[in-house]
Length: 391
Ligand SMILES: [Zn+2]
Image 1 (spheres, rainbow, N blue to C red):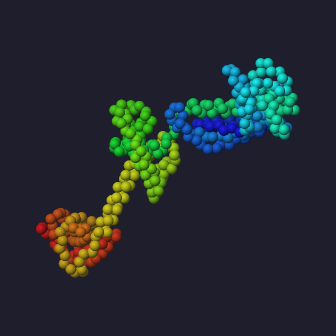
Image 2: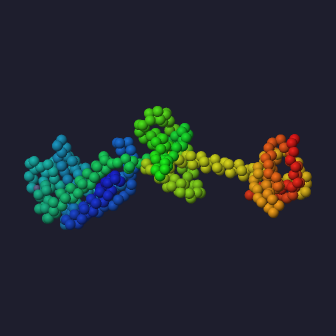
Image 3: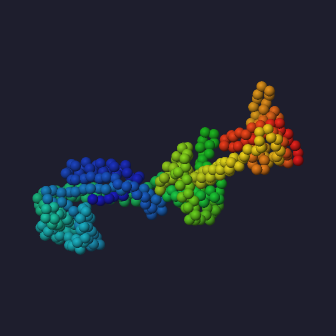
């Protein structure tokens, strides 16, 4: 049993290879099976994080009550190398001489196979040509085939760690977000691309590019910009802010496609380059959301402040704190304008009249209470017969 870590770029190749190996093993009567386990993220020597798929390979070359365990090899530096193809702990063999325990012809012998008798559990070291004789027929060619199949997987694993394209670089989502917060704290937000006629043009100075520049320390074309970026430090407080934004995005009740996509991206520990754009905008989206919430709460607070004033038919007088014409509509007697006033206690007054107009500060309103009503949770005193005059 062995695990191989294969780069995601080579998964198709792996699948093909596994199928071929499986077919060959079936043909030669070798037990063989495999399964894909987890995905693992690992930073390689190129400095980037890559995604690998762990593949568990189960193989066994056996005949009657003999099975193949390992190949012993004398290396050019005279060290003994045990290539273990079993789950057995073979440490006790690490200092043995390479011999054939069957024929004892050991001159120039550079390798041998460790075979185990599955009944007696005895382990024998045998030269290739003696395997068949000693085990009553275990096909040594199958051992050689099996070894070469496993070597193909090792080759693929080696390739997996040395050759890939930049489209498979993975980034830590939370780190990208922290960088985005730092950038948007300093520079105005710039979209990833713009529309010119029918063409989508990438914005060179987009926030996304700034984030990637800072995160990857890629030397930007604009040295000035890179100098600016290099001054930015990613403090722990940015990580805290990043957590805040992630908590917000994952819990906010909003099924817009932006939030849905943001949720998908922030839900994963790692992201790809095409996810960086939406992450770069996340701090802005969060700020806008917070500001909107603040405004709404302010509005609610002001609404709550407004109380009904006076009794029905009572004459009132107050100095105008604010005025707004909130509506106008036509009736059979002509146009009606709806004026909304507040007094110094933030109480709301409504006056419907045939005249429009702007009423600014330093004015006193005199009117008669017609009705006490409520509109959108706001208490409003409806006035009639109003006169507005200077102080
Ligand atoms: Zn021999």
